[in-house]
Image (tube, rainbow, N blue to C red):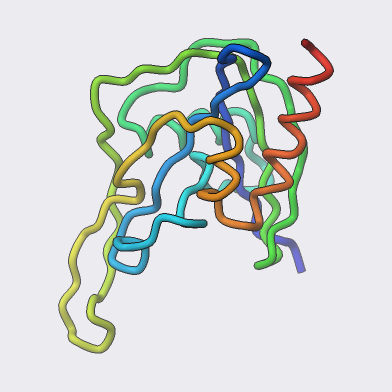
Length: 158
């Protein structure tokens, strides 16, 4: 049984002294609406096994942000298995991304469950820069190894 494949992009920018910030997104829809701790994610989405993961990551980033990912030399950070069994392949680049606004694609959802009311919700309802220690409190727990890998990469480069 093939795992569900997902690909994402984790942008970072250095801040003095020796720290860095990451660009992460708050998940949209009623389930996440009032949650903040562990309710943020790297911009990502699913793709098929015949698709190039970087191409998929760039497409999903553009869909969730409403702005293309910055042109950069993206590097593979790794493939990270999630508690759900899904595997996220993550690419990273050092880029200062400043979109004018976030305009995510939407998904249909029946809410409240069993009500028969289907509404469209944004996949992402907020996205911004957070210092790495704060991002650790906001990212869904399954993505913390992604942040750990980025910490190692940034340390190795500094």
